[in-house]
Length: 116
Image (cartoon, rainbow, N blue to C red):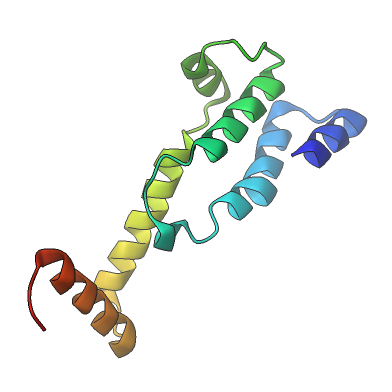
């Protein structure tokens, strides 16, 4: 993130371009594997995202979080993770891959407390 900030300062990038870079380089790394590790708060990711939005806007770190997200038009990172998890789950439901489908069904039975 520090590298992104320093490059943005050198190149005088606008907020839209910085958001695009953040999504491409940082979010993709932060959310790698979120389909598998699942839905939890991930406070470090949330903090990094909020620091970025406030940096882009040029406001103090004490500025209200909701306002910084609304102003930049960015979704909270948890929403992005939930979207990716749901997208992966729908893919599992529709897959024709026997091994993947079998693993999903075993996991589903375990969660429901069924015997094999």
